[in-house]
Amino acid sequence: MIVKHHNLRKKLHELWAHRATAVFMMAAMVVVSAAATDWANALYILTGAEDSAIILDDSSDVPDLSSQLVYVTSGSSGHDVTLAAGQTVTVHHEGAVISVQSKEETISALLDRLHIQPGPLDMVGVDLSGDGAVLTVASDITYYDKVSEPDAAETVRVANPELAQGTERVVQEGSDGVSTSVYEVVWSNGKQVSRQFVEELESTAVDEIVEYGTAAKTVTSADTLTSVNRNADGSGTLVFASGATLNFSSAKSMTATAYTAGHGGADNYTATGTAVRVGTVAVDKNVIPLGTRMFIVTSDGIVYGMAVAEDTGVRGNKVDLYYDTYQQCINFGRRSCTVYILE
Image (cartoon, rainbow, N blue to C red; front, side, top):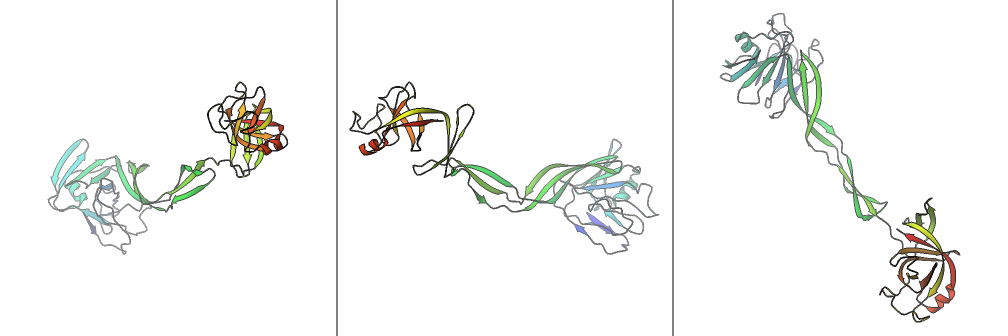
């Protein structure tokens, strides 16, 4: 495609290039000279051109429509488009299709040669995406505009079950970039009536990726119970100084007694076959099922802590708490306690 210079009154000031794609470029050609032909006011939509130079004349009488609009005149000023000699040109007009060879002439001259005169509200779609040129003379034209736009980086948050709950880390730094987007543009009766986003083809923006932890903090023997949050149904949450929490389904007021292996008939293994250790609790399995996880605190503030119902040998609303030494059992004796049944 050639952009032809007609007595420019001022220095041409803007050059705009597009890549060759099925996406379109737009140019409007409006004849302003008194010597214009009778169809000169038709709007031209130029599409599918490769590496084309679109130049704007900065004359004050050019209306501010778009940076993609080019104004041409067959008179004393402006620009016109010349087709290469021998180029096949297919013209669609009022339901008819005409195929001709260009004589290295402007589009306006070619239409004049074919005696095609667009009306005041007609537009001429010029498609140069194929081997030849396709001209469509109509009052409604739709084309696709490919533009580059600034694209801000986004932050993507990803759960990491191996990362502690309440913590997060950046695994990929983000950076802003440029996106290439396609818009559908519709003109009717010489005016643009809509411009809608169709798709984003590509973007150089890099999203920031942040992992956040979902692993619950574990309660250790050194952890301190700081509060108990109770719900109306008897459930609740135990909150610890480390930030760890334990949810419980119910809380039972019971009597606790200490025991150890080698005393009172207790040996080194429980009724369920596990080895005794601190955290082993003997229960009445009709009150607390074997295998139940518990957290036990005495009414005078001694925290026995995490425990599992693994042994039997008591009856009723009682628990026996295992300690490593007989002296610890003597020191503990028998106390009232709260047994939190953990979820």
